[in-house]
Image 1: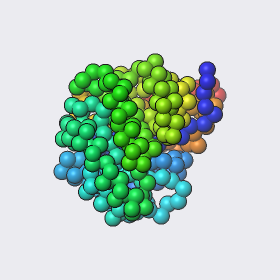
Image 2 (image 1 turned 60 degrees about the horizontal axis):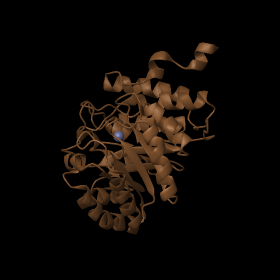
Image 3 (image 1 turned 180 degrees about the horizontal axis):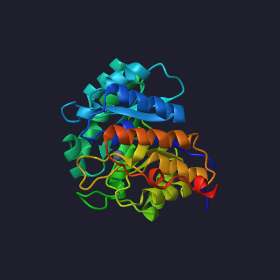
Image 4 (image 1 turned 120 degrees about the vertical axis):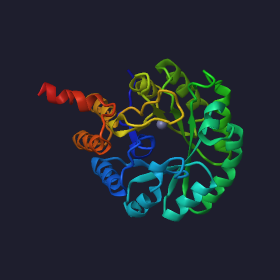
Length: 303
Ligand code: ZN
């Protein structure tokens, strides 16, 4: 088995994990979580999103979180942005890294941001210019490249057109996001291999939801294909509000545990992460989707 010696994980729990939760956490609870994640070793964290507070009330205080955390060095705090207003908010609160998003599925993109993928792509350039002019870093993500509840399988050329659109506006860090949890390992392996071969200049991230229990297998398949950057979510919370039966990203502690057991470095302290995930469950008042919180570490069983 061809596996990397280390991987980089981005914690998306504060954004993807919380955005759909009915219980709104306070800013100080979110700050505690963010500080806990940094203390556990995360170097990349998706702190929130700049969306309309009416549409996503849980993300209304993202600006506030940045104002508190802007002085922390050595940790990339990125935020999801949908439009020009979002870029302006990012600039104003001192956020230094944003992620744009478009869905490769027309139905999903319409449900999510009320625009066709083509309209979203056309707006990239203006938003990217504004962000770059103000010294922000910009990355992009593509939702549903592996399939969508609206159209089924997505032609790979549709995905490649978005990759090319990102490259044209100078974005070469791109995330492939299986928001509906429909990707399968063989498909992931093939797409990761072909994308890396066609676009070697791109830094790829993979983002798997565990809706059908395939996220871990998909991470393994991505690693076999040479990918080393993955999004994970504390406690496995989350899910896109527009995807039927959606569940969260694969849980951070499950992924860190597997990597630990296989000798793949993540730089993250699993014990601190487990504690933090318990705290999050307590804050939200419900169980997430985490094997390790239920079963504990293999290491503890063997000792
Ligand atoms: Zn997601």
